[in-house]
Image (cartoon, rainbow, N blue to C red; front, side, top):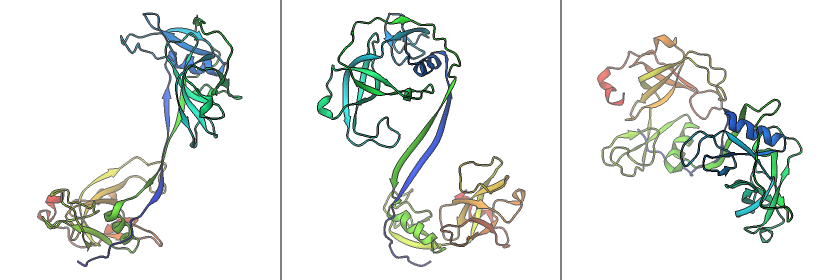
Length: 323
């Protein structure tokens, strides 16, 4: 094993994104369909409170509630916070206020955006009204935002509503997305940089002397910091594996046909197994103890897969602690 110099710590922007699909019960269906029709619905509890947005179970008694009522599209700001730098996907692309608005006829407040020129134009108790989106599809975004509205009565009572509309909305798809900057830290930066040179680098614990790959900057057994970097592999031993029978979507490996094998591989000189795909052998011939080596694609920054070396299988006693 050879010592490896310390690299610069890496940073990169990352995005985690997926569509969240859910079906709607009768209360939520009526609420969102009502927004499409410029109607705001709430639900009345057994003790006479009107909840907006509506829920299907009383948050106090847990009783199922279905008594729909229509409330006004005007209301009062109960509290607010200024958003000086809107992010992608938020209701407005210019600075605005997040507000809780208690619509006339409701007993709870609805969270949404308020379009005002600046924080000095917002106050608790100010009167506002709904600004509807030009195109409405049956979603909370059918309320484009709220806007200041100094007129209108505050004592309006909720009106019973059957919650029946043509072509009701029965489900929604919400795009969940998280944008962030990821830094793998000192230890994994060294690991990633070494992979780009077709080398695998771990770190040795100064106490137990075990070498961990991928390194985490600390020994998972002793809890002490690790700093000594050593090169391991490139060959290794399959310690355990699974056969994948479902083709994964939204990955870089869409061309991988199922079934295929993912395995834990103990690289020579390492005391912790890493996982990787096994190829170059029928999936039903992969086995514990199989000796493998990495296969790199041109320009690849990490092994595309591991393949058999042709060596005799490793003895179980040599890798049993890593299963």
